[in-house]
Length: 198
DNA sequence: TTGCGGATTTCCT
DNA sequence: GGAAATCCGCAAC
Image (cartoon, rainbow, N blue to C red; front, side):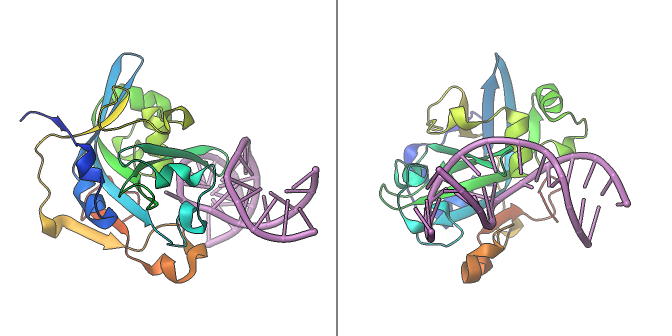
C-alpha cells in the first residue's frame, strides 16, 4: 500500500484521539542521504493546564510552540543530555503535544545502531531519549513541519492497529504533577516488545 | 543573577 | 536498586 503523509487536519484534533491514532504510524527521518524508518508503538499526551505539561503555566519562549500550529515538531533537551520529540496538536492557542516515546525499527538499522552504540534492535528506540539519539533528532528540528518536511515526517503505510491492542497507563516520570500524574495519557501497543517499559 | 530540578539513560554496586 | 552525567528553563530573589 502507498504511504501517505498524515495531513495537518490529522493533528488538529483532540490530543488523546490523535495520540491513540499515532500508534502504528511510520516516523521517517532522512539523515545524510539515508532513510531511517520506524513504527510508533508508544506515545504520551500533554495538554491544556495539565500540570505535567511544560505549557501548564502559560506561554514562555520555550512553550510558545505548543500553542502554535499542529503538525510541528517540539524538540527539547532533558537532563542536559537527551532530546525528546513531540508533535504539536489541537487548534492554535490551545497548548498540547504528543511525546513519541518508543518505536519499532523498520529501515536504516545500521544508522540507528551506530548512533546508539548498540546493536540489539530492542535497545535502539525503546525510550524518548534513545529514539532521538537513534534518529539524529535534536533541537535543530524543533518547529519542523512533519506534514510536509523531507527531513522528519510521519506517514500512514496502511498498517492497522486493532482497538483492542491499544493499552493506556499513567505517564512515565511525571510524579511532580500531583493528581495530573494519574491521568492515563500514556498509550502503547499491548504486548509489543519495543515499548520503553512493560 | 542565582539556584533548583527535570516528559532520561547508563553504569556500578 | 542507586547514583551520576550535564544543560537550561524559569521562578524567585
